[in-house]
Picture (cartoon, rainbow, N blue to C red):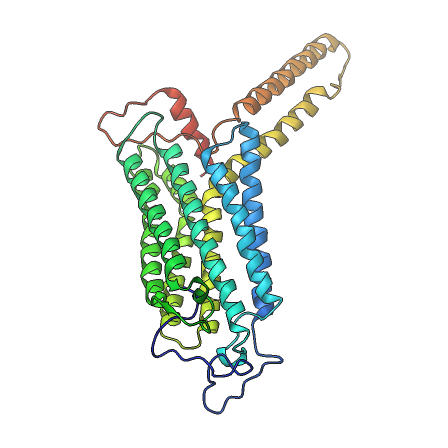
Length: 387
């Protein structure tokens, strides 16, 4: 889906030192200092990199608390490595040719190099989608499906995961085989033949939006079917509703794909499409790491409370004596010591209990007689009382 194909209506320039595409009437090409949005793109890149790094660090910190590395953790770490490579390609283009450059402000001899960066970024983006959405669905399964249970949520999640992965693997294969010879994929100056991948971009964006909506709706359906107070349902729903961010980004990506398909100024319109792709995978990391933040915040709060309890328990107890009442005040002092000591022990016990799953296990009531009604599950669900 690099911004060039065999569309008969698409025309390139005629000379290597000239513009990559003929400029509109009354517009003169500017090769030395073309208008661009490099400052905006650089600020966006720094912002999303900070947000994603914080999300991943929170997730890793939660894993260290649990002393356990899960499959979603591994997929998330691999996805983050690809994400950094993806962002690096954006910076590479910022520091060379620039973003949001019009075709007529780009020399034809430089267009293949820009096109190649777009193509490499596209392949990395496909890999990112496979890893991050598979991690999200596996996380959903671990939260909403009891161990050893294969219910409707389990099968629908695995089905979406498999179809999504196969779809994007097929897209990678299509992109790698769309042109003959292979170099023509990014270099339109090489003679050969290519498929019309620009139209495929619109289809792919539509399918991607459908996947995002399905992933967003999966936990919502289960949450509102739980037997718990409405306040907790709303809290859980908000926690898992961050998936709406990915849906919004996917919708804007679809709009950018339509603009890209209908435009001849493909280097400019593809820049917008690429940024929405970046926004979508950034939202994916927020969705994956969001539940971990709850556990991390709760742990830090309990650690702070435990520290205060230890300080109170270890502080010298003042003895207030009065004539004829020293014995009673002495007994009161001992009682306060025992009470504080008891509070300290309770805080420590609560601290030990806090090393539970990143998100409390949620009893899924798909059947009329839920198989898990033990008090421990109700206790873990009550951990969400803060909502």
